[in-house]
Image 1 (tube, rainbow, N blue to C red):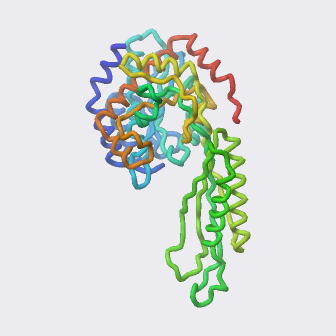
Image 2 (cartoon, rainbow, N blue to C red; image 1 turned 135 degrees about the vertical axis):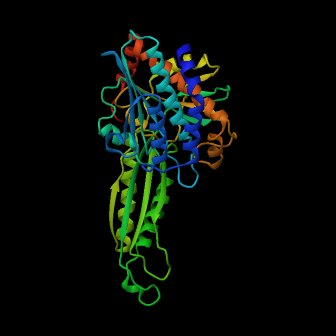
Image 3 (cartoon, rainbow, N blue to C red; image 1 turned 180 degrees about the horizontal axis):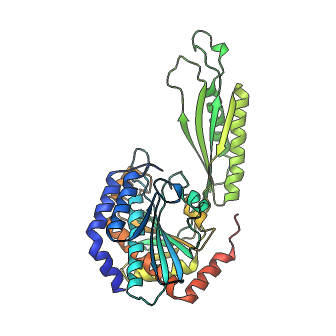
Length: 401
């Protein structure tokens, strides 16, 4: 649709400024103040209704466009958090741009067809990197009333199969659970009277060691990760406290939770073996992403008009996780992956991907992807058969596995 292309062309320089600002100021989960303020100011400058700090989350926002009464509602997600130490190594600056483009483009399409009733929302979804921002937004009712939710994620161009596909519409992700454990011991002088101490570092090491042994007994598609969050700072004191996070991944939530139950036994065993006490808290889970063939196929068809050859779906899920998976258990959803130029042996969460996410080529790819998402949203707005088919795909199996 010419209305879409014209609308985005008019604001492309400003979109690039938004992109560069987010990219040049990487912020961690729930700390995305610059990203939040930059996007909000941009959307307001275009006359859109924007709620800052939406749903009681400081770095979330919501932009809304309504035409007429009734009709369907399409929600686009914008992520913008970064990773510690390596910035936008997951390209969330580009996710923000694709979401903004999709929202503005679908608004333009509706304005060009004033007899069509509908509602478009752009939801700022912070803290995807471990903070479960979308889960908190779901719990706060942010997705209520929406018919579909659409978003995109950048990836290396080399990850989309051997036939030079430039992206994948249906690329399932797996489930993730996590638990944070605090071990508590008793301090003492490590040289003078160590026998009076209870070593919280020993408890952590014991737990980590038994988790490491557990790894050889898990299935090939499962993962266990560990991160020491608090450790001793000096060597001559028996440490009274340590903190660690263990995360588990599996193709389904049930599998990840069962694996986490085993990890918790390792945590409890480390405390018991060393005489420490332990407290642990389970983090909000990330569910596996449920694919929607109807939405996948519509996106592929629309991206062809922009010269993109998109794979409809991958045969195997990637061993990554996203809180968008939780959204796909609530409504029909689309979480596409668009390729950006980067070295063939590089994937996300790598410094080289950070560099790739800041290129003009990556920005252009995000813009094209956003237009494809907008056209997919247009299909949902105006075509009853497409909406019914997307709903039927969703209803086939929405039981949490």
